Image (cartoon, rainbow, N blue to C red; front, side):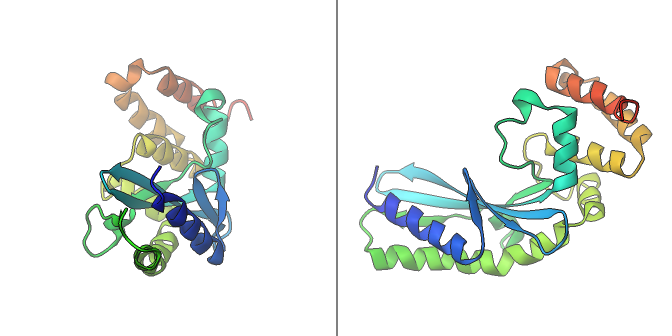
Length: 207
């Protein structure tokens, strides 16, 4: 491991801690000002010759959606999660550039230069994540974003989050119709989707 990595990671953890975030495995989590929501930030690194790059993801969790997701899937599909985000975006896509963005740390840089890059990264976090967190701590806004395809979708979050929002709205028939259409394709071969579907359609029956 490069000598700069422990320096960078320690500084990043200190900066998150100074902003009230608590480390939970690979995420930094903070209680939102809005009841029932969490703000989550994560930092991942890529390694190249003489270089480390850092990428920030911003996510919002709704505790009620997370609870229902656990009930509908459970077991191996949930146990390894820190939290289940309702939205998750690479920070570049909430910045004016609206494209993937990362910060560069070089092996031959001084500590002062490394700290300068960390400061630039946290300046961006401080500027761009609060409006994103505020806007997305609203299930109606999240639903509209997914329905209108105004998000870059990560994994299958759209499938699960949108259906749980329909369930919370009491619109389970819409959720079932949408899910049954989706499951006619390749997703229908997945044990995970089938489990979710069976538990979803019987959710209120077992309560």
